[in-house]
Each structure stands twice: as structure tokens, then as C-alpha cells.
Image (cartoon, rainbow, N blue to C red; front, side, top):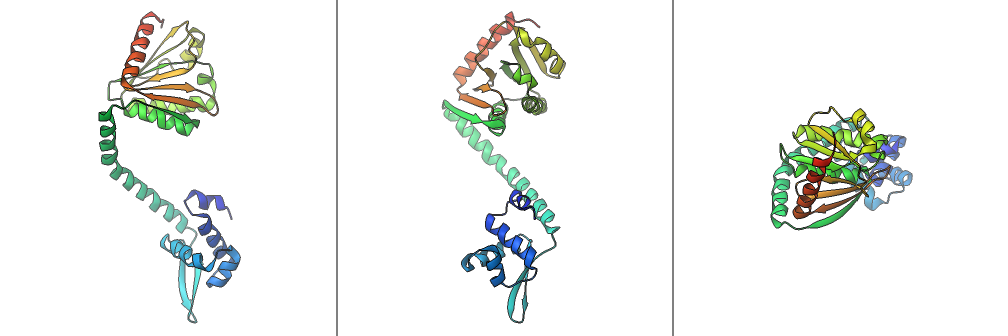
Length: 250
């Protein structure tokens, strides 16, 4: 049995062990289930009840003994679909809370710094930067290295990011080193709502600029992002970017 699938749908280790035991035993009372799974009597009833609630197991009384069995394995798909529907419901219910919390945080104007690691972490960081921009505002960046343009994982990341920028109708402007011009033209020039210029400069890290936050990025297979939330610093970076833009070449 592929237990990893059961983990991915959210079952606990105890639930997986009991479910696996039921699959092997067939209809069974709790004694053999405890022996097979190694789960104590104090816990096995609770776990069985949770599996029943999830539609993955059922019970029946035979000869005055309660016996358990797994339901049709196709119920796993139904369980996953129910989870998806529930997550969508929670997602919609969360929007007013998130908007209220975001507004509250924005009103505080607190300056903070945070470090994100890995592509999942960077997805959060860039998502926050984009969430802080309204339709028609600009996403600005300084491109730093060839790796940003050639590493398949990084390229895929920016492809998804660009799609999100388009969905919000955000203009993107970027400045890259002259040495990256050919690669830039091959991959990005011609994209909607995207402009790039080139300048003989070298930055210690890639920089992305939003309305009130700056992201300093070190790319690679396990990227790192330093996030600075500060409107005054974002304004300064934006001013520096615009001055450099005027001297850069298309």
C-alpha cells in the first residue's frame, strides 16, 4: 500500500496504521486491529471513529461484537474532493479577515525585516509584494545574475509570477546588466506589460521593489530572500531605480 498517498490527503500516522491494518484484515474487531497496527486500545477507538467520520471506514454489529472494515477505496477520492470544497469555503471566508488584518497592519506602518528560504518561501514573499500593489502600479526590479534567467526552477518561478502580475494589470520594469541583454531579449522582451533596460552595473544581489517593501534575492536551487517592509526605504529604492532607468539603454 502506498502510505504516502494517505499522508498527502492529511491522515495522521495513527490513522494510516489503522487503515492499513483494516485493509489487510478485512472485517475485524478491535483486538486484531490493535495487534496489527500497534495502536493501544485507548487510542484505536478514537482513530476508528475519525476514519468513519471521514468516510474511509464503517462498522457493523455481528454476534453482539462491533466489527470494522474499510469502505470502498474510491471513497478516498470523495474525501479529497470534500476537503477541496471545504478549503475553498474557508478561503472565501478568510478574505474579509485577511483584508481587515492587512489594513490594520498597514495602518501601523511598522518597519520589519524577514528572511525566506526555498521557492515556497519566496512565493510568499513575492505574493505579499504583489498584494501590496494595485492595478496600474509598478513592479520594479534589478536583475543580478545569469542564473535568474537560465536555472529552470527560477525561470518557472518567474513565469508564474509574471502571470500573476498580468492578472493584476501591474506594469513591470526591470534593469539588468549589459551582459544579460541577449538572454533577456530571448526570454522576456515582448511580454505584455513588461519593459527592460540595460546598464553596466553589478549589484550584490537581485532586488525587487514594491510599494512598501523591498526583496533582496539570492537565487539558486535553494534561494534566499531578505524582505524589508518599509515605505520610506521602498521610496528610496524606487527613486534610485528611476534615476538609473533614465541612464539605461533599451
